[in-house]
Length: 337
Image 1 (cartoon, rainbow, N blue to C red):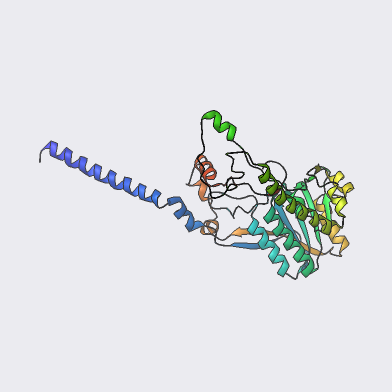
Image 2: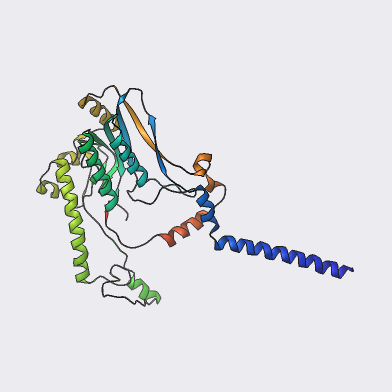
């Protein structure tokens, strides 16, 4: 075999392996390789663990639980990304308290600007259930924020402490959408919309809402607002007029909130815990907190797989943009929507 034939043979082998490699890579992407890999490490179930903070009577205990971040059910995270607030995990903690007879008191630490209407209502309902069925006290300690939905979940507490610097209040409901009709016209974008009814694209962003549509949406907002007011009336023992005097969306500092009747006293977390112990004879009770972990192969290995391989920050941002719905939703939220 001469030199030219050897060169041709080597070239053919190289092309063959290149073709096989390319096809393999394409097949991995067609089957969503990263999703398939993540499924091997995916969260299967949230498990609640206890961590003692101090030693004490294990038959008479105080549970310290915390809501931190925006109250939205965005899942329990994955090997690629952790979430600040795990709604399902927190609800699991509340269920554990409901069924644990050794828990004789609860301190709820709130550091949240609020969040979803549904998620806030779920927490509120579970806290009320704990109070009614377990007949145990719930005290709230407010951090930097306990606004809107953050206050909603605090309302049923037996006593609420805030710091002078706490931002609270913001009682109300908001729904927002971006109207980019004029911008689209300026850049030459035209929307072709085929719809089953005249209101199907309301708040879709491609046109301004009509007066009729705004009235429809306002009715929905007003209904949720009245529910919010009722929650405060029942939780704080206030009249409707007293609540609505400050329930116009305004934010309040800790001292202002005390004067308005929304907060009982100024104090930090330690003050809240001490008050609960003193008020209910729990001086010797064990104080503990919950940790919610995700039972997955990745968590058992104790590794952060995203640091080894996975989508880049730019790819994750792009995926988030594509996967996040921009559909308007009602929120009990203070700050950026």
